[in-house]
Length: 133
Image (cartoon, rainbow, N blue to C red; front, side):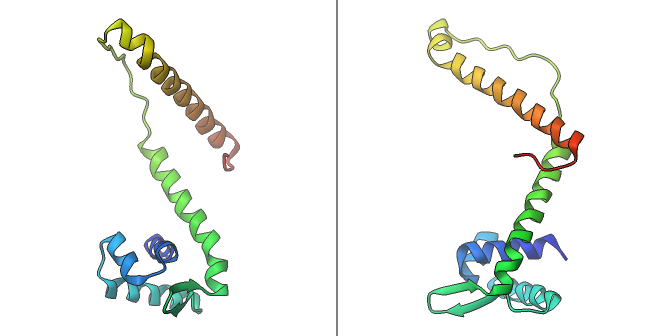
């Protein structure tokens, strides 16, 4: 199963419209419709019902949604992890003392705390081989 099909499925679910999903993904509506048909054929079920108010998930679509979201989240994590690099070196900033004391110190302190927290979470995920919350 292609992740692209799950991405299209997720977008249709969010937009409740083939044309809105096509616009958001910058595809032709006919392509979105054809790709949805491929996914439904592959899974041997209908994923949406159509009405004047939009497209809504069938029972099968409701069943697929959490799995699709999990797979897309994992893909994003893999891409992020593979791109993550520690940048060596130092950063020097030249700013007026008043700006440093009133604004920049808080921003930098928060950035450093977030960076340390993300490194710790990343290490814990890799060590335990399970998801991190």
